[in-house]
Image 1 (cartoon, rainbow over the protein chains, first blue to last red):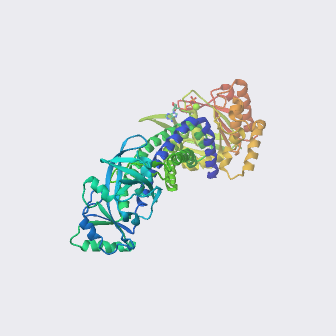
Image 2: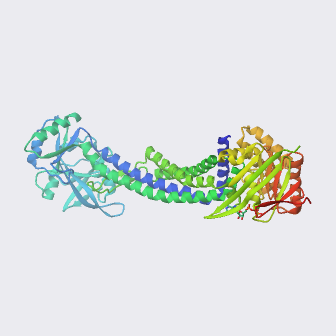
Image 3: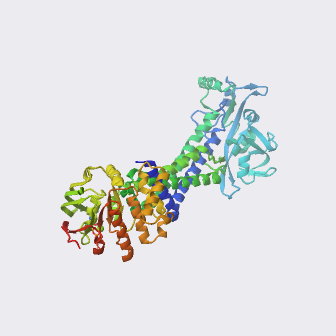
Length: 394
Length: 229
Ligand SMILES: Nc1ncnc2c1ncn2[C@@H]1O[C@H](COP(=O)(O)OP(=O)(O)OP(=O)(O)O)[C@@H](O)[C@H]1O
Ligand SMILES: [Mg+2]
């Protein structure tokens, strides 16, 4: 018994029949294309977000927060504390002194360029060392702020996104007018979604006194983190929470990434259930329309397994076409698409959707699975139908 | 010196319709000799198709045994039965049951896909079978491009292409006009006489039965020998 030629004969017959059933076959293709496109798009959002946040941190930098705080916004440090922290071992010492920067992180109300909707813009008060610590920050238009003035530089993603961030214009935030003097890049990381001003000016404007939210430091090397952390812990005058910058942003991204990913799968699964029913329905009617043909083949001696396989092949072929279309759509529409506004600690993060090869593969794998499920039951039903009953053509 | 090809012993067939038993054949006995052309007649619903399907190995009896040649086919598994059918039985149906997407030649080739024959050899044999039924010039036509009589000839070519001993025909002329029906019946008769096929044919048509070497009547699940016309 030559089962391969059996399978190919029946499959050929089924596929030849496809044009006659183009309408119902499209149901599978379109249904599955939709599932894959949506799934891949949402997962690419999570991927892009994750990549942006994880790319923001460096292991040889540390952020010191008040003990018990896990985010900058919820932290505050006095000048006394930051001065004390700055004396600890592990901090890189250059001709510009010890690389520690007092920074303040606040949210400013602003409107989006795209749809005029209100949004929260992250605003960071920085000092001179902030630029020494973050070598990736580079002014790409205009100039850097002059300390002591109401001047502002904006990350390119923030400038893209928010109204009023135009070189030379003034931005009114909390009763003060900030002059936009420059735009900067930060290696694609999260800082590009922020605007930066002089920490001292900012805190005066907010009437917050001389402290800061956090202290960023550059370590002598990534390995010196432990020394630095130990020194902070050993000091009874200090109650701090110190993290590597990379750890800090990775941790910030985890819950949001997981949330987007879970959301993606939840939507994907709901849509997949719909697509499976559509596929089942299509394949059931496809095999029932051919039940006499299938019974005839079986009367001639064709086996049940080749029949099951050939029906599965058809469902799989349709599903894969759908999967490819869906993945291509997701890629064309969403790869590199910039999104923003993500809740959580980061009021406003801009990031690019990343439709990676891995996600495309995942989408197409899903389409194959859906095709297999959609084809399995109808194919088994077709193969198990008693020959004599099917031959009666009822 | 006629050998018995088919021996149906004490065969009953009870269908299940929901929870109800539908007895169709009861303790039926029948022997058919090698080279016979037997017509099976009887009122609608009497169980002719049921009996034919049992002998052709498309279904299994509820009880009793069926021997075809040296094989007790009621003892075979589904898979074994499929293989047995492919080697020993040719089927001819009332509505031809050709695959519409395949050409006449490809339809005839179908049973040969179950053998180890090369594509070239399959084609050759399909062509030969088509010339037996007088349709060698229609090899590349699809069923939709053929008349009913021609379709039935293709189906007959398909039934004989793997050279089975037994031809099982369920109302082969039931869907054809008189003239075409007679041509088909003559073809079947030819296969019986010149090619030595044992033929079992169900028919409602007394004139069709005339082509057979003898006829049996099935009534209420029992067989009665008919008088030769
Ligand atoms: N799968 C089945 N389940 C239940 N009953 C069945 C089944 N197949 C056939 N029957 C019943 O068995 C009886 C005999 O059917 P069968 O098809 O063998 O009759 P027939 O003599 O071929 O009739 P016809 O001349 O109309 O073709 C009928 O009453 C039919 O309804
Ligand atoms: Mg019948």
